[in-house]
Length: 212
Image (tube, rainbow, N blue to C red):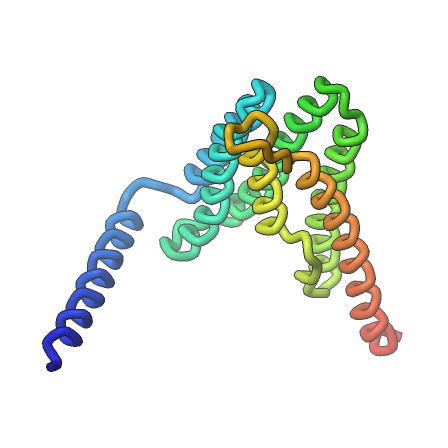
């Protein structure tokens, strides 16, 4: 009666051992977090180029894989112990560049197609994304933790990925979700900036009596 259970446990232990072995080999390799970060940059630039050629599905796949690389570099840095202060700085900087490059390509597509409103919303989205990051960085420089808000980077990545994969001409039916995705990102980033400003104001008001 216990044989299936024991067999299942053995498979779990075997899988865990395989993952641990693969992780150790990866850590012992010459792979660095900065190499992963640069790979993410290359993939996002490729995504932007594909968007300008209206190859939205391929651009969406490149953007998704590049964004996954962006999340892996930080985890690998912590797991391997190979992280550096410059690596953390480079990672954050490249994240902003990659997102901006892809949205800039989307803006070019809308402008080329004559959709001036959607192109303008791309500009608002880039500004909003930068301000979401800036408000957190500035708040933390003042000693206030600021992770509140709806439009975090993972949310923005998901929205833009859906928009690209289901863009007009992407080959997945008659969907056209690129413009709606940009509108949603523009609205959510603006709202998130407001959330973070309000949050920081409240937290600093709590500290002001102590400072006086």
